[in-house]
Image (cartoon, rainbow, N blue to C red; front, side, top):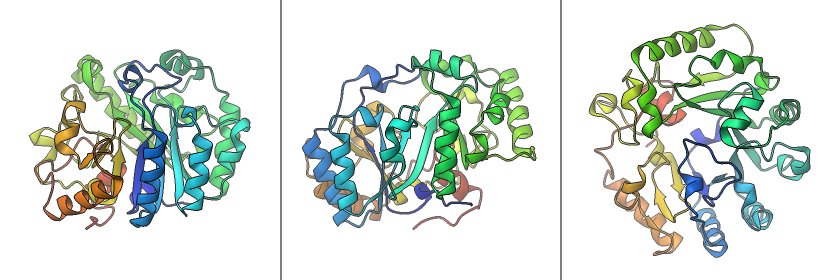
Length: 327
């Protein structure tokens, strides 16, 4: 079965319910901030999205399932006819959450995993050690139903030489897409040309391997540029990486941040969220923000931000000619 990535279809809204999380990932800023969307704002946003013709919601956060009354919100999502997916640190890939995993409206599951070794990964993200066998069982059932299964890996100097561990994980044959996302901020300063070259060689070898496994999307090679990884220190694109490229994400997707900011995507630098976005749910109704988005896109909003560092598989595919640009 070769499911279509729902995130590549128009009408996908990412909804970050909260920043508080049960993990403390060193490269993540979210858990250091206590922002969370009020439940009434979330319910109103879900209703506005459904009325506006949006088709699916990808829940994220902070670990989304720890949001108070999440099950009530999931029931509302179902009643509104919205499909859903989620990004998880592994907490929900557990038999105790089979009610969520067995939902017929579930279309996409993304697992964040930075090291093949489960104990090293758990230590790095300050999480319990989740059973790879339990994860494998969950992904096998999901894949058999046609749910799109993805792994996101934050690509860092500390794991660039360890990517060959991933195909040995028991759930790897069920994964459709492996998204390697370059670390930003201070950790990016650890890159050097030798590490970058070794990562590029290992990524090329993995991509060429005949074994079953996911399609790999990452920065080298990317649909944007082979910019040195040590230059990727913020969400701002560099001139070299965006020249003659087009961002397909903002026309197909929407990102609702736990701060209330409604953004074209989730790769916006924190200090730019107010100027790049379409509004804030603490100040405007969801319907007002969605209308403002329509007007902004019609006026080529953010036309100067022509792309970013392979931030999203949809951009990667569009700019390498794999799919037609969305209009």
